[in-house]
Image (tube, rainbow, N blue to C red):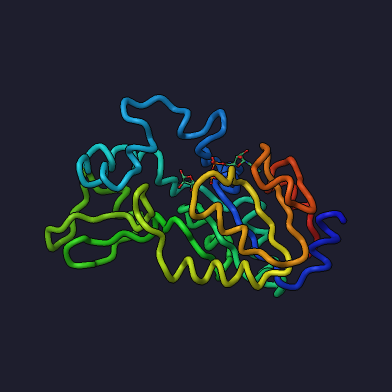
Length: 235
Ligand code: APR
């Protein structure tokens, strides 16, 4: 079956995405040739994005974070927009994303499970007061709350657990889906990558530029740009 035929045959689609869904919005992914983890830093980005590093070197963390993890200029691309259209048409149950850029919501998606949190939510570690991404972007050095407490982005750093409610919602949606479309992810980071195994439905589709460990289990594997592929879909 073609992707169009699969989508026509589906009533409860779930989309599981990664950084490759946002590269067509100008945001580099992590592990491709031009990905963030291939860039040379004194301290590897995977270390700088760790929970220990955040607390031991908050200045360095925020310098890297503002420079590379806060693309507030980015706009939703064709993939984000098509998924929002599929949700409006009642064909898509939910988006489950590993991305923290909020572009699915900007495109109009409502039921979005952000497994790794969001740059748009930031919390004072002392009093719990919330701050938006713009506050973090325009602050200098380590951002502090009016109460004096340090502010931390609500993103899942290496070594931190995923949010229980988000995990529950994402797994419930995937296990209810009749079609799971996995796209723009290398499926190398757990527990997120393991979520696809909760799928028990009819059609498993992969849209990814490079091979992944899931390829052999899919009914349909499309080697291409997810924005381009989805833009050709008629809802
Ligand atoms: N269309 C389709 N696939 C794409 C596109 C595109 N436009 N651009 C990139 N890709 C593919 C790449 O081939 C790659 O396999 O997307 C995948 C991106 O993989 P990663 O860079 O590993 O990103 P991701 O899988 O989201 O990483 C998971 O790792 O560092 C953590 O928390 C971070 O959420 C991230 C997690």
